[in-house]
Length: 326
Ligand code: NAD
Image (cartoon, rainbow, N blue to C red; front, side, top):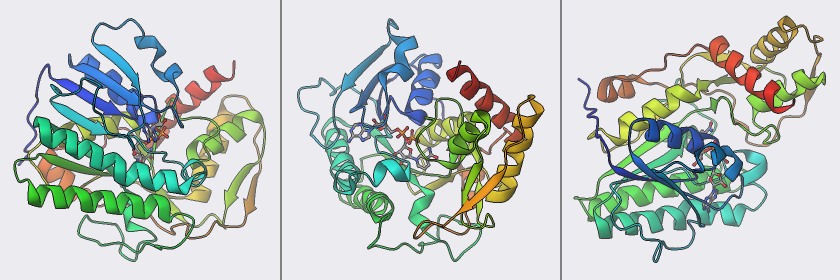
């Protein structure tokens, strides 16, 4: 039985608004009729992702780092906060791991303090990385994960885990505080930066440029790919549900990296471009071997499941990448 209840015309704060997911969420919320305030430090995002909203009467963008408290920004009469601010790609979150940890911990602490003081509902975006290199497949929310606490990926994986722990601690201490946690799995779509090193944008970027697709490892590792519109619908439903524990938001379709690379090569070749070769590079440390969400909980409590199949989502994504390079 779904527990999702649509809330109309509220005032919503989106942190990380100028990022990939954030900019799509802002568009979605405005279309629903909400008033939206976006916050971003522009560490990995860019105001260009929101420039189509420059004169939108219901949207405002504030430059702010969530590691700093929100006093003085006039955010007291907000109804909901979606916390998306955090670099999500390994090349970005590993550039300044101490800052990544601060964004994860101090960032959500500042948000929870603002929420507690003003009775604001919070949705925190966690990640499938909390499952690390999983020993359970597919991954249900009840799985505790297999994460290296002392390595190159720890700033993000453990940062996201400690953020969930802080959400839990606040919920225990302040039972009236409404907190939702989305464990998002690999999401792709238009507006994902070309150069951010994530598998979808890297493969598409290389194939369109006529360069070989570079797989790290032997290509047998698996990933699940969720299209952006499915993810945003899932986040919205979770925010407006009464479910207090983490929920996986991902697409359970599972592909080896090699299969995925071959799909991209073929799709780009179908557009009349040369068929690029696939090359193999050493696998990065602690790279997870498998990844696939168990979405039983999301189906039950949100009445949600992904609706966009991989090829349809990739058509839109490739189209966007081609427009960018014109
Ligand atoms: P992104 O890098 O495109 O966007 C993140 C945004 O947050 C950027 O605009 C960046 O400038 C901003 N930001 C970073 N640190 C900040 C800070 N301290 N203060 C204010 N703004 C800050 O990443 P994304 O893919 O849009 O991811 C959004 C959220 O979803 C992240 O929290 C990420 O961990 C989570 N997530 C994403 C995926 C995915 O596949 N895209 C998967 C799992 C979880």
